[in-house]
Image 1 (cartoon, rainbow, N blue to C red):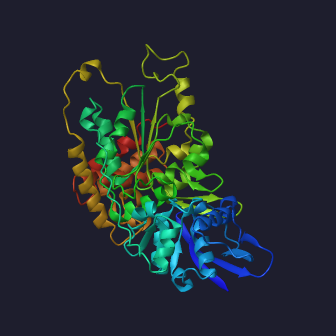
Image 2 (tube, rainbow, N blue to C red):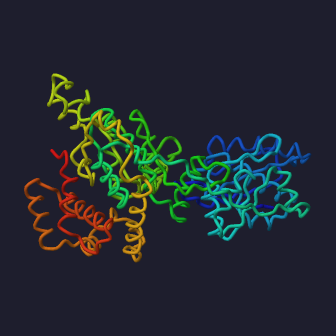
Image 3 (tube, one colour):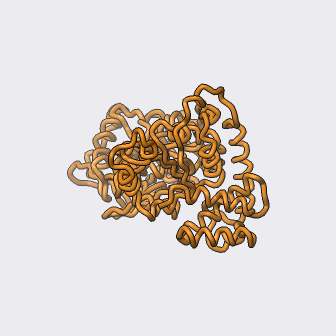
Length: 502
């Protein structure tokens, strides 16, 4: 007979169903796995044989063939151990075949039969819910998968527990969702002395998910400002938390099944490779831009990044997703992030200080910032200069608005945007608005349009830059709860757009 079990193969954040067929036929004793398995899947036969041996289950002296269907879909990872074992146990009539066929299983087997946690339990639970099947996974992965309310999740500690569950001896209760991870202690913007204009730019960027570039001398507070940005961002919505957690699940970043409602803040080093930033590698894993989905990607020392790496950011910034092309598959990951970049004005960092600038000033500044291409620079909605802070200001007590005050305004502005784009599922913040929608929500009055047209002609704004100014102006109006864009909103948006422009 041919017994069937079910599991998944991961392509990006999508978990595609895979049928595991087991045939036990007369012939020379053999155990083979076919269906385009990788090395880890092929080695499953040895782990399964050892796990069954510890349970005193002897394999029949026949030819055992495992087929992973569809056969042309690449199968990667050790999570195929458990479904292969289930199909085999059903084929030799130790557990009911009909019950196994109603389950999607994933899990790695140790040699003593213990189930080892694997990555991807959350996407697998989504597929199990869509297929109306029960998800069987290692006990350590159950709390993570149980966050999908539509799926019934069974978390087992060992293969022996699975056998006792399917034979009705000791049923395993459904797994419960893990605890919501408490946010880390946020840093307060009130700690930043001076830099009021940079704080204002961060507030606007956070409210509308606009990309921002900060340029300033070393020690002026660029990294300090960026580190305090997560504190003014509103927590993830339930849908956003699930999307973000699915990517983290594929990378094994979910601890103890807990879902984090804090927006991601990723800050890779400038020596990171293209595969690390964009995604890729042998198994086309998600990169930093996908791990920053629904959050912030902070690139410090921006011009020091590899030029090719920076240029690959242009397409994800526009589309909100990245396609990783490989010879055998094309994998798509979401990457709707807020880009925050920081740079020194030149290689030595002191271009604006005549007493400390190098002998190549100002040519060194043009060469250094020139590493950022025009098309990439054009995608920054806000550009702000961060001047050095006077020593006298450093002795002053912390004053001004802090993270709580600014965060409240940002949350109110985002709530307005949520209501505004309620009829557009793909639009979440002002940064996403385009085409007819942008014309409707960001229509300037005659005075504002005249100002914008004069600035566009004088400073040579591109069509992309023109629309980005409108989006930022819409966000500035939202921070004041203004229904329409005012001339002052356009003027402020232009002041950030043209700052540092060549």
